Length: 83
Image 1: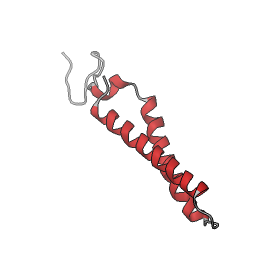
Image 2: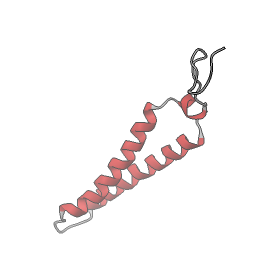
Image 3: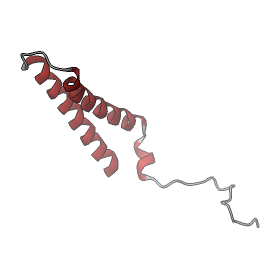
Image 4: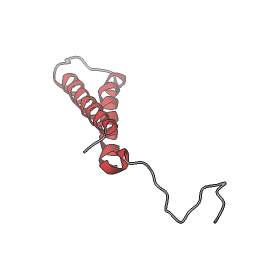
């Protein structure tokens, strides 16, 4: 089961990739006059942001997001005294 943070990140990443592709397609096929490179950077940046989000999410296993961090039983935190 995936956690809510991962689900939100997946939806956001897919939405950004889709918006970037739509913007890129619009610029490629529907704009007739030459367009400045500054305007090309908008859909490319949106696409890259979505791809980066999906890339980071794909590297994180599902279990690590929802589980709390546990330290090994032999280690003590700062300030703990030995027995």
